[in-house]
Image (cartoon, rainbow, N blue to C red):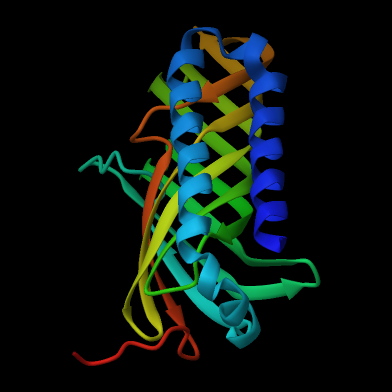
Length: 240
């Protein structure tokens, strides 16, 4: 009964997301709907597969802290430096819900004139608690970016972008050791940003400001790989 309740709740959250953003997605609507259909299929199949053991798993799991080391995205530009570091609390039990909570600081830098920083949190809801554990979730992220292109001291342009983004996550966590896992995930990012641009031409500066909404569905930008090192064992890996 509890499994059916969680299944229906997951579906309602996703459908609310589709309905709210449907008139804003336009060109990306077909891609996003197909991704969410796949997510709905996973939500339907995986809990049924894991249903027999879920109650026992919920009782046995205890909250465990972990350290996250991740990529900022999957673009892997040779000329840039990127990464992320954070903390994770696995199997946090809040009465009716068990979830994973994480906080992550990310960066991407090409040089001192091209820098991106981000600070985010996320909730992960795992379909099954096992060595291979697929999950869905939601994230909230704040970002600050600075781009500067300078010809000389009198001719240059600079952009500073402050952003807040949120959206759903779909990923999988695979345990290599009992306290070491790797994960891969994809997210659909709805980003609200405020852009401040300053242009200097022959020493005369002009300033512009723009506020906009952006939907990011590109695979490289919206994907992440990482590892998690837990301070205590999370799963039991039996020798065959």
